[in-house]
Length: 196
Figure 1 (cartoon, one colour):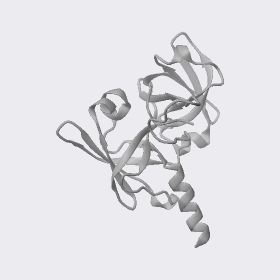
Figure 2: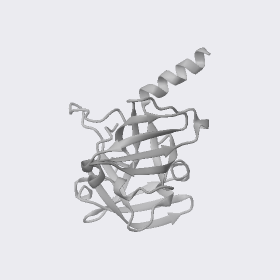
Figure 3: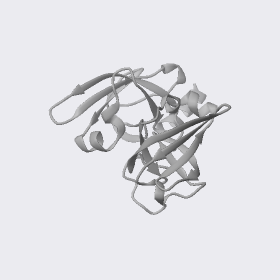
C-alpha cells in the first residue's frame, strides 16, 4: 500500500526488452536504500525490485502492466515518480493508494495560474471509473484532490512544491499519465452496480 506522497524522482538509465517484459533500470537517491523483492511505486505502478546497482535499481514490467500504464512509453532519460511502500504505524499523508493503475489518461490542458498550475486530464469512461469534486485521484502516483470533475475528465491544482518535486514539470498536453481512482469510490460504485 502507498499514500501517493512522492519520495523522489528517478531517471531511467536503461531499458531492456525480454520477450513481452521490459526491464527498467532507474537511478535515484532511494536506490541505495532498497532491497531485492521490495515493492516500489514507479509513476504509481507497484513493481518489485529485481536487481540493484550502486545507485540504481531494476524492476520488470510485464506486458499487462505495459498495456495498462504509461511505462511502455518511457525512454532513457525519462523522469519517474518514486514512492516506497507505507510503513505500518506512520501517518497516511495522502490517501490509500494500491499501486494498481486502473487506466491511463491524456493531458488535455495545462494552465499556469498565479503561483500554481491547473492540469486537466481526459480518460475513457468505458472502464466505469469516476471522479467526484474534492475526491482523491492518483496521477502518475501523486495523491491529488479533484477540483473539476466531469464524466470523462477532471482537473487538479498543482502547488509549486509538487511541480518541482514530481514529474508534473514534464507533463505536456497530449502526454499519457497513469490513473488510479479512489479505492473506496471504486468499491461503492461496484456495490451500486450490483444492486441495480
